[in-house]
Structures are given as structure tokens and as C-alpha cells.
Image 1: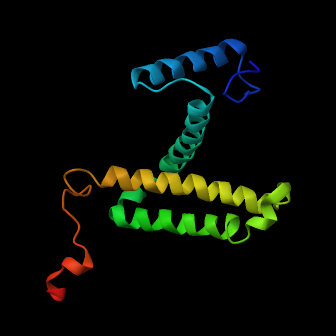
Image 2: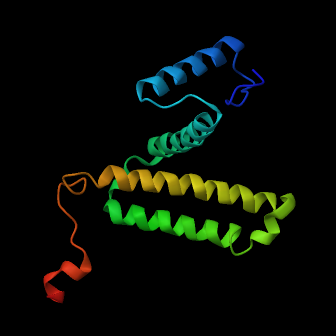
Length: 146
């Protein structure tokens, strides 16, 4: 499938690849998402994030829930800071493909982690408050500052 937005996976048969493509089309149709190269490329990024999440969740359990939504938001910000440091502040090193491969791989890992931390934040920050059901109190709202 040369025109497929899905990367070729060597251990998959052609039938399996077609089945995955069709299943993805069904999910996209269900949610009203157009099935095209851009949406599929975005989907593949999110699937990579989900793979990393599933791997770490099986190893560490729900430890990401322990400190609540703010900790996950701050962790995502830390990952964005690292990406900014690599691609913004030293961006001239990345023009023309001259980036160091290890640094680039680490940056991609930071991107995946950042997306997952934001997903954790969104999952914990529900209409009822946090996962514990309590609305967090911001420092400027505490009685101390009143």
C-alpha cells in the first residue's frame, strides 16, 4: 500500500494491514473524522502515545493519578520546556537534518510523554473536579491569602 497513510509493518500480512486500515476507517466514520493522510498521520502519533502509555501502565500501574491533575500539567510543561530548548533555542542545529540523532530521539520521547501527561491531566480534571471528586484549591484561593 504505497499510498497508505499507515506505515508498513514488516511482521504484518497484507490482509492484516487492510484489516487495520478498515477498522480505523470505521472508528473515524463513527466519530465523524475525515479519513485522509493528515488525520491518519495524527492518529498514528496518538497510537504511539497510547502504546507507550499501555506499556508503562502495565509496569507502573496508575501512579500518574497519585499527585492529581496539576502535577501532570506541570510534567507536560517540563516536557514542552525541553522541546523548546532543543528545537527553538538551538533550532539552527536542526536545519537541513544536521540534528544529532540521540537528541532528536530523546525529543520525540519527550513529545510522547508530554502528550500523555496532558491526557492524564484531561482525564483527572473532570466536571466533578479531580479523580478524588474534590475541586483543587489554587494558592490564591486559600484562606491564608484572604
